[in-house]
Every structure is written in structure tokens, then in C-alpha cells.
Length: 427
Image 1 (tube, rainbow, N blue to C red):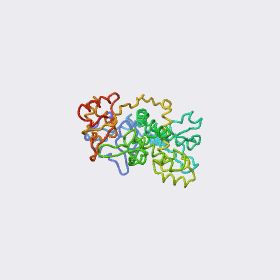
Image 2: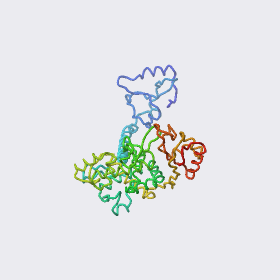
Image 3: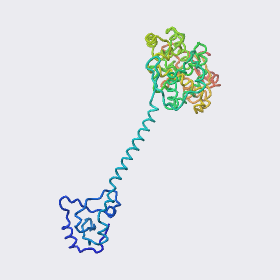
Image 4: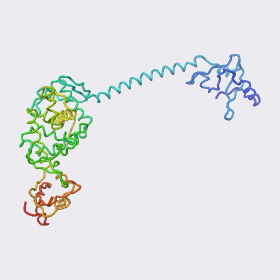
């Protein structure tokens, strides 16, 4: 606050205050010393008549009053408005305009960057290329240099639209679904040997080993068969007409049994391929996800039997292409920075033909084999945890069970079941 050289009396101050009350149109307001000296960030206030006496601000309590200052004093000279001190307005405008431009450019860059991850390649019809993706990962060079054989047929990966579709799903798995992808890899390493034996026995390409995790509940955006269950998304259990006898009831669901469900899938995918009337396993897989009738109608409409030339329902296109992308990643784990743990295969003893004299709880199996109950359920996924037992009879009919135990514990279980009176007859 700027003080005059001689402080006026209270009477003079009050008189001065009354005398210098702003006239009509006079916008003069008390200002701080910084603004008077031209250093403030606000524009200067309009001034009174130049012939009027210079005034200074004096604080008295909580009130600001005007005190007269001699015209020739240094204070009076300092309080004269300087035109240069009023230049803060244009400076502020220039700074605001520069800030607006910078903000606009930043927003545009962010929008373009985010859009790269939202673009998805779509193929509306035969021969039409989809949108080129902005994905971070590319297809391996060795995959692009030679014809890609998959599920018994050649994938035309040299076609730009085909490469784009596979690259999109590859980036989806590596960027958006990386945690689920790691789970797929680990579980595939665990169960592959079981599925491999079944598929090889039934004449189904080994590439379908990697179709199971894509069909399971880990399929993320593209939902599997709505009512499906288990690794293979079975909508209902197979029956004897399909070569595999399965059942679902209050205590178990055979669709969750690893071996039985794989055998059921193999039987159905072969039948679908036969019903379509041609050799394409990819089209059979698309029909398995949707319906045989839907795929047959699309083939007739587009006069083609190639998966890459026919627009199919979204879930079929996404899951089949994702299956191929997963296979490429699985064969190039190090190239994509995936140091997956060397998950050991799931090895267990399979005790078959167990006829029970009384119901056998999972907790009792765990006690006899010195194994946690959760591990017994993991080895026997067909059991429903809410029931948690192998029944001796179902609807009055004696049951013969297959029980999986940890490796080396199969005969331990048999001997203890016999000693405890659980066996109706020897296995």
C-alpha cells in the first residue's frame, strides 16, 4: 500500500473522502501499488480529469479512503496512469489464444492415438478389404513368407484383407486380453495330451487342440454358444447315436469331463462337416459356433465355400479368426514377449469300474489319498461341488464310476475303499 509523505488529519481525510466521491461515469477505484505502478495483471482502471488532485489509497481499519497528495510530489507522479502499464489486456488475449491452439492440437493427437486401438477390420463382402488396423503387433515374417496351412487347408494370408483380419484378432489377444491369453496357454499345456489322443483317434486335425480355449468361457468379447458348457462349449451331452454316451443330472455333468467332452466334440464336428458336403474344417467350425443351416445358407447365397470370402455372423467370424491368431501366437511365444511358465501336463490315475455299496463323498476321497478336497474336484471336474459325492445308485440303478486321483494314489484309494466297506465289488 502506498502512503503519502504527510498523513492528513482525520477531519481532512473525511472531507477529502466526501469531496472525491466518484462522479457519474467515473469508474476510478482504489488500486494496489502494483497495479498503479503498471505491474499488475489486470487492465488499468479509467482515470479522473487530469486537473484533479492526485490521490493515494490509505487503509483505515477495513475501509479504504482517499487522501489528497501534493501535485508535484513523487507519489503523484507515480500514480499517474501510464499507457504502457495497460498492455496486460492484449498480452492475456495472446496467451489465451496460444493456450487454446496447444490444447486443440493435444486433443487431436490423443483422439488419433486412441482411435488406433478402436479400429477393427471388417469385410462386408467377398473381395472387399477391411480397415487397416493400427495394432502394435505384426504377423511373424515366417508366417507371411510361405503358405499357412491350418486345419487341413491353406489360409490365404498373403491377401491383405485376410492378413488384416488375423492381425486384428492377434492384437486383441496380445493387448486387450493378455491375462486371459496367458491362462489359455497354461491350461492348453495342461490338457493338450488328453485332447490330442482323442482328436487323433477320431481323425480330427490337431489344430483343434487350440479351438477348445477359444470356445470356453474365456472367449471374452465373442460369446460362445449361449447354453454351452465345458471346454468345447457343448450345448447338450452326446448320446449313444453319436458314439459317446453322456449324461447330466443332479450330481454331475459329463460335458465337463475332459475326455468325454473331447470325444463328443470330435463326433459332432465331423458330422457337421459331412452335412455341409465339403472338406472345409474352418466352415465346419463356423457352423459349430452358429448353426449348420446358417452356414449352408450363406454358402448358397454367396456361391462360395471359402471361409474368407463369405460374410458370416460376427461370433463365428471372430472366434474362428481368433483361433488362428491364437495358434500363431502359441507357435511364436518368445517373439511376442510371452515367457509362459512351463506348465506340467495334468497327470492322474484313472480308477475305473468302481461300483459302490454306499455314497462316496469327495471329502472321504481326499482323506484317504491325503489330498486337498479342491484338488480332487479339479481332477474330477464333472462333479458338481454343491453335491460333492459319487452316488452308489441313481434312480434305483447301480452306478459304476471312474474316479481320478493324484498320480500314484489310485491303488491307495482302492485298498482303503475296500477296507472301509465302500466297494460293492472289485474294480
